[in-house]
Length: 167
Image 1 (cartoon, rainbow, N blue to C red):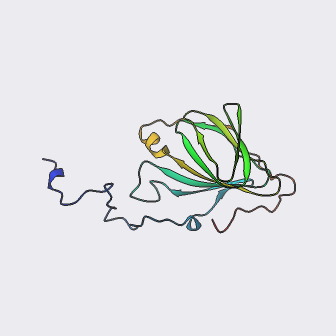
Image 2 (spheres, rainbow, N blue to C red):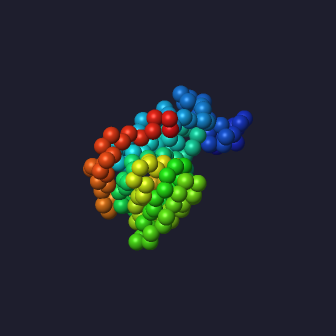
Image 3 (tube, helix red, strand yellow):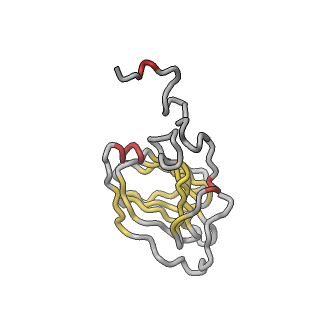
């Protein structure tokens, strides 16, 4: 017998954190995670299987775009849901122009080659992203490709852009 029927409570992943994990929390502050990237696009991964032992199939990160900046053109097998916290801009999904603004929710479908653009020349854009990427990686659906790298310089007049410290 495997002993699985001898458990007195649900195991890890059944609303029970790993009793041997250092962290058993369910609320994570994005302020505790450093921004990575630059100079025009920054990101921070807040929730992932690497960050917590109680979530294995989802990932959430935050992206910040300097005024007038844009990110890499890329594609991946997993779909994604973006909530626009701040700003206005547009995406290009497989050649299709899709405008967005604060309060909008945008879906990037599986296998779509896409790119995010901040259309505001004076204000940053902040996006909150949710993906089932860990589940796709577990299933060995690994395809993710950068088609075009983001610029290595900030747009004119934005030489001192830094992502927000309060997010």
